[in-house]
Image (cartoon, rainbow, N blue to C red; front, side, top):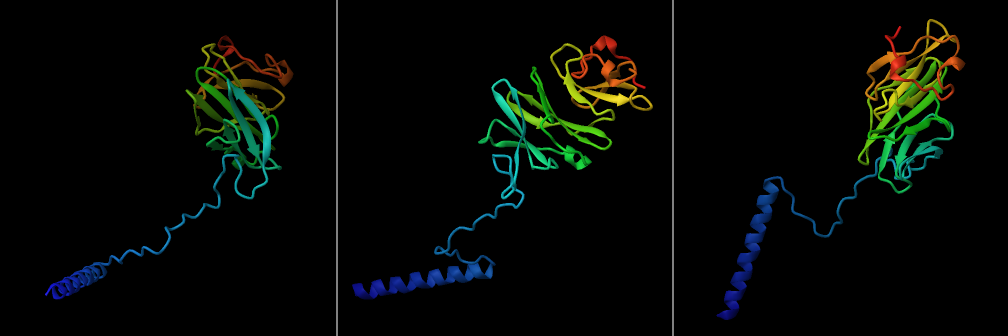
Length: 224
């Protein structure tokens, strides 16, 4: 009697398991295969590693700047036609893509300049046939982000300065007045808003502070 009861119980259990499997298949839910290994996520072909390089890409440090104890490296290919800013060192997790190279400009050893302040800023600039194009990366409380604005200098000079004396950097873009070499300095906020311009100078060498151009707020007027 005991053996018969056990056999009956096993038959009922098998029947219930089979019914459940049939219900799963009917509902479109295949039974789990406990023998297979979990799926492996593919690695994106354009993934960027913490060293600032894509897999298999030849790249190098083109320039370095420091904001306090934080180092920022401009990583580019040997031709300087693409690049990224690596923040914090070779093991950092933050890498910002450089977009100025989309304007057909080339990066070089002097492409990265930074200025420390309450709101710190770095300017990545590249030169081309039509002038210099730059992009700004802003840092505050250890967090860095790119500004969605391209800066342009027709006279070949983009830099950072503190025009208003409040510790917040501005972008100084040297522009041509009608035709170079007559030039003036256009001052823009980090967001790209125009603050004003200096008077026109007969040649770049006459700009205040040249070649490290510096401008004060009192020198600004309406832009041409």
